[in-house]
Length: 501
Ligand code: BG6
Image (cartoon, rainbow, N blue to C red; front, top):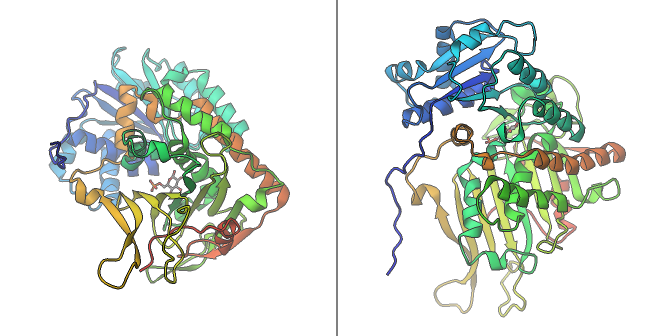
């Protein structure tokens, strides 16, 4: 008989060859908060070969040691629970170098950076642009002009790629003039998350699910990415973007693609990306005619979180704004699989808790044999919890045990990652950085994918600008504006926020 046991042994890590990684924007938040700590963890697990170098560049002039110190202090500040001792850091930081440079200037002196890279055409070279997208093109040109684009050089672009289809196209053209598509790694860090990767395994490695994964059986899908943090120190950037550009165009649409796509033939990067793009192309446009029924914009006012008063978005920003910190959307996918089964997307800052979930809600039973007391009949739901408390719950109606007749109870079949697996889950950036070094494009967005997502989002932005759809205020620490609940109510549905006791 087959048995299943939880494997608690350390998995074999896939080795990577020696590489040099140049981080542009090395003194910024992303580099210090995410990239250097991610590389540290890969080093700690023995995945960074001895001769690999991490070279930070930014406009400020600093010595290697000063940058190492800055990186160390930031690590301790941002990851207080991550225990790291001085000697460990000292060994790791031998991989770190720094070169002060204005990479946007053609006249800058690139010699210090060149000196820190090894002149070995076979060594993998990675340029990571932790910079605003408006300067990607200039930096790429300057990398080439400075003679640093080695034969196998790769470039990593952070989101957002542009702020609409037009600017995304411009960024892609400018970067594409220097690097070919196979060398361009466009990051959406959600694709590096453990639970997001699991979506493919869940859907396509369990024969139970695929036959019911369609509009005949599924009533609708909800994707919620709620954050409790506010825009805070990023408010001035955030005000140029808003939740639709910052979260929906990339993270939520990638999740939607993974839930909705057809089974790929294999796990090849382009096979998966070809399937995702078909979903994006099948999205019904949101236009000025339907924007009021299909979208809700919100912005947090002041409120309270965990008993503490928190300021409004406008207060953090320092002026008035109509930018949305919350958005809820109804997306329709016009293809055979999903005709008539909407996907409701919702994301917001300063919501009452941090919670990212995908909810697959199945249709009601065709004929209810037992009338539930008080409550309405509960549908079968599959709840995929992406973060925190990663896991899955299949919510089923069962008979409440004991005497008293056929009383119904709604209970979960529970898989909690914390209980089932003892492994540490690497941060998304750890996985993504190693994937770049290995050249695994499957976890990154292809140019046509980014542009197709923008095409749909541009329609919403246009409709918003024509229709003057209001941005509704919601109190910080709540679930967003009431209009989001009303949008589902019109369809006789409601957001699912867990089983009430
Ligand atoms: C980023 C957004 O891409 O994702 C941020 O720019 C957001 O505004 C963040 O806070 C959320 O990421 P995570 O991994 O914390 O869910």
